[in-house]
Each structure stands twice: as structure tokens, then as C-alpha cells.
Length: 103
Image (cartoon, rainbow, N blue to C red; front, side, top):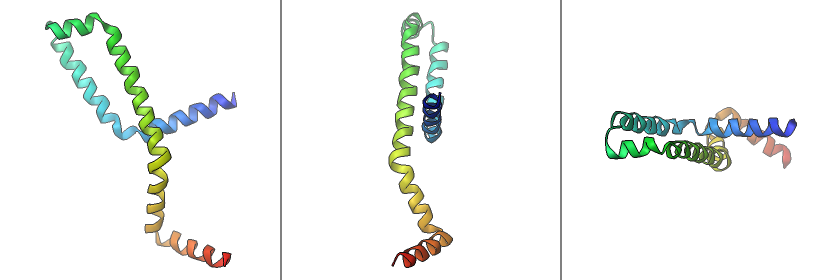
């Protein structure tokens, strides 16, 4: 149960980190609406006759978003926090005091 909860929490964090990419989801939805409107065309008919393509694209899109979120969490977010902390005068004051205590 604890492993499942930990996995769900990690997945939530990954999805939260990738929330900036939801614009891509909106873009894909616009394509879907466009295809729905053009359902009478050759391409629209093919795509909706093969609905597995849409399901596969959604699954792949979610997997890619999770990978992006994981990348951001692992590589970008820690550096971002470091830069934010450097710009914070209170943090730097505390950091300098700690460094003096170590000496």
C-alpha cells in the first residue's frame, strides 16, 4: 500500500511539473475538433474509422508529458531553487552564517 501511495505521489508531482505543457494538449484537442469537422474528408474518415490511432496518440502524449515532468523535476527544478535562493537575501544571510559556523 505504501509503495502504491509513493508511486501515485511521484506521478502527481511529475504531472504537476509538466502542467506548463497543457497548451500542447489544447493544441491536440484543436486538431481533434478540426478532424471532427472534416470527418467527411478522406483523412478524417480514415482516422475515425481507425479510432485506435486516437487512443494510441493520447496514451503516447500522456507518457511524453510524464517524461517531461520527470526531466523537469530531476534536472531543472533543483537548479531553479538554487537560483531563487541565491536571489533571496534572507537565505543568503542564513547560508553565510552556517558557513561561518562550519569554519
